[in-house]
Structures are given as structure tokens and as C-alpha cells.
Length: 245
Image (cartoon, rainbow, N blue to C red):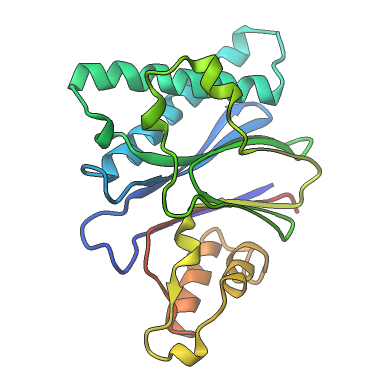
């Protein structure tokens, strides 16, 4: 199994990349992957996506250790729920410790757990973004008014979680990607007549395999879009792509 990642600041952003990604081992045959997109209208929006990402990385380290001391297997759906509950719990502690406002904790999140042996995965999307499974596109679009995890920190977790409908179960995948909505923002400013469609961009980054032998495969393909096709990403972009072969 090969895992590719990339993180790019958009042309319209000057100071910080507000996106973030997570790619961490959580058990001997499981990985947690996530992409996060901070809300541009939020306060210091880069902070929220990085904070959630750092908390998730720490949770992964703890879960990986727990596997060695517990012989009780946990299915992917249950484990994903546990991780999100722990993410919310730890975020609430930090929010109180730092006196943070809700507007400082706005970030979208696509999060999933991959079974690397069985090529199975469970996902939850909070807000917008895109999942691509063997060329099939599952887009979560909320009309520029995405839901944010930060809105729900004070709610009863069980009630909130049971209302989440942006869930996805994946099995027998060969090529699986998650990405923030920056993938829809590539523009050709030099020649608008040669503007590529969203699907052409998606196919180039999430479906095509040329140069996939390189670890920086996705960076190379984004560079090709810029240098050869004059297409630049205008919003921030985070991608995690997994190929089983």
C-alpha cells in the first residue's frame, strides 16, 4: 500500500495555508487519515485546522499503544466514533484552558480509518470536501456554508453523532483519496479558453497514475498543472491518496 500526501497554499492566500492533513498509524493494520480546512472567515483560521490535526495525531499515538495492551478487537465504525468523541473532549479542554471563542475553532473535517489488510475504510465528513474511490466521486457540498465541528462542542455527543449523515463505508478499494474543496479552485489566468474542467483536474490528481513511483507524486502533478498547463490552485488544498497496488 502506497500513501501520497500534499499540502498547498492557494494563490489567493498570502500568509498561511489554512488546510492540514493527518496520516498516522493507529494499529498494526490500520491508519487514520484526515483533511481539514480552516474557515477563512474565522479568527486566525489556520489555528483550528492545525489544532484538530495535532490532537488527532496524538490520539493516534495513544491508540497505537493501546493495541499492544488490549486483545479486544474494535470494528472501524466504533473506533472512528471513539476517536471523534475523544477529539471533541480534548478540544473542549483546550478551549477552556485558552479561553477560545467558537470563531477560533472553525474547520471542516473529513476523517477516516483504513484497514490496510482488507482495503476497507469508514469515513465521516463534517463540512465539505471530496472522497474519490476508484474513480467514483463522492462530494460533500454545503453551498459555501459548511458545518464546522466547532459549532457542536457543547452539544450532547451521542445526539449529535447520531444525526451525522455524511458517512461513507468503503470496501475493496484499489485507489482512495480524500481532499479539501481546494481541488475545485484551479484556475488558468493566462488563457481562460484553456481552462480545465473540475473533473479533468480531479482525474489528473486522484485517478491518473503517471509518476506514481515517486513519493512526491502529488506534488509533481500539481507542479505539472502549474508549469505545463498554467493552472494554479487558488484556495488551499490538502490531499491524502492511498493506492493498494
